[in-house]
Length: 313
Image 1 (cartoon, rainbow, N blue to C red):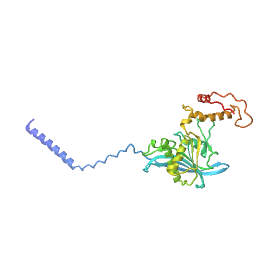
Image 2: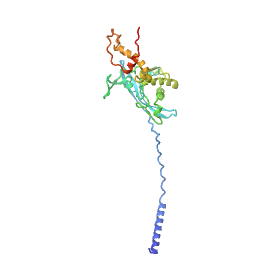
Image 3: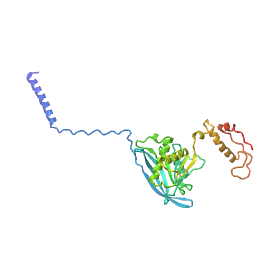
């Protein structure tokens, strides 16, 4: 390349670089970039609000019309740091115009553990019940509900409880299931709900009862003690519906003698009532006929009854 042409090429390149630099300098400074959005921590779970729905109803019961208020929803339960850890689902029924100082209130739950209160609620206690056929499977829809003439609402106000993890009760916020799922944890959790309900609804002066079915019987013993010793709540009574109070002595399949001993009197009474043994039948009309041939015994019954000697005299 000739020397003159090389100098011209170099001069043009330098001029182009200088013009680009000048243009860049003339541009306004770029706006500072927005800070990166804060990342959400995995343990920052959203905390839904506790909500309730209130409706008015009437129930024909005992030949009269009973007006009552139904409150269904959730109640926020907090830890010692005043942080929400659970939403407790419940349905309350309160007679309109009742005197809270004398009107009893019953807190009721099923067992499991792990069962909601739907069975007691829609089976016998609440103002509505599901129509089913006794002794049938009852697993096929459709189902219908009717006014429950057997409800206890004419005698007491009623609060159906769903322990945390059942029904509409859920762990929220920083709460963990292990804080509610366990014998002692379950007792403490249910007791906290009862105490808070009493405070929020001005029922401390009311006669107070708890009612538990199956495992709810075992829970009731702990709740009664927890309420008295931790919250200064003295119950007026405890109702046990087919309670399961002792796992060791409640299962006939376990290799323990206690269940068989406990069942013996029930087996004997049932056999006597069914005229399977000589003696007076349950209905009390005349003398029982010759005992019918009993059906085959369960192996646990055979093992026990083989060791029992008949009493004389």
